[in-house]
Amino acid sequence: MNQSVTSSKNSDHVVIITGGARGIGHAFAHRLAEDGFHVAIVDLHGAEEGAQALVRAGFSATGFKANVTNASDWDTLLTDIASSGKALHGLVNNAAMFASLDMQSFEQVSREEWMQVMEVNTYGPFLATQKVAPILAANGGGSIVNIASTSPLKGVTGMPHYVCSKGAVIALTRTLARELGDRGINVNAVAPGFTLSDGILLNTEHVEKFRDIGKNSRAMKRDQLPRDLQGAVSFLMSLDSQFMTGQTLVVDGGAFFV
Ligand SMILES: NC(=O)c1ccc[n+]([C@@H]2O[C@H](COP(=O)([O-])OP(=O)(O)OC[C@H]3O[C@@H](n4cnc5c(N)ncnc54)[C@H](O)[C@@H]3O)[C@@H](O)[C@H]2O)c1
Image (tube, rainbow, N blue to C red):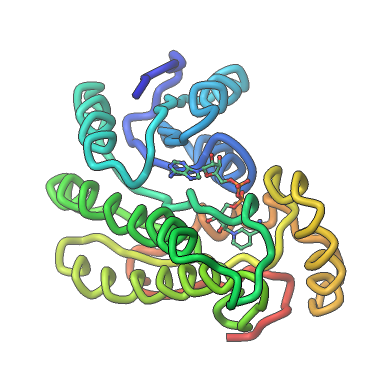
């Protein structure tokens, strides 16, 4: 666990973004920094570099090397944030195993891989919320945004563990919305369609299988990019969405209508 850098332009309100070092998570970090939050990037790899990039752009950010499934990592980073004197405002549960997964039929997925995907993609956001919610409640409330996927809504083939994990994220969003509503915390999800993130662009199998199918299924027939998702998370982290909770916002250029 490492705290890296902060700029002189600190905001007093912190939003934690897991998996914020690259890809979609980094796009969220950039947008929330533009919105005036101090951004805490939590990632297994490149957290400090991700924060430094934001600081160089004139924003306020800190990087923490941490595993979202590790309780003591969460304790350390939340203690660091508390000692900074800033107030925690929100959490974006974005870190997940997806881009690095191989395509497999349901017969091929091993128990070990199933459990690993479930641990990162469902226990990670659950543990993060267990750790963060009491602090948000003590601060008078806040917002949690879980990054789901349209894959459980469509029933995409080739990665049943991933699809089930993202279905669980939507269910987690709903149950936690009910658990936390009385504590002033709203919990919502964003479900992206297939998005050309940094990780996806490294996986040619995913690009070949999903890019054209995704594009052709949309009302708006173009590639989805990380920046297409920024507005939804910005809104769900803002006071404008305070009375909205338990919802899943689909952002996919109009491929799937809820
Ligand atoms: N790219 C898509 O097509 C797509 C579509 C729908 C949903 N999503 C979701 O959007 C989110 C981001 O996707 P992406 O394509 O940018 O992925 P990515 O693989 O490019 O980035 C994921 C980030 O999470 C980090 N991470 C992974 N496991 C971690 C752990 N245990 N602890 C801390 N950090 C960890 C990685 O280091 C990486 O920086 C994921 O939740 C993904 O499921 C992506």
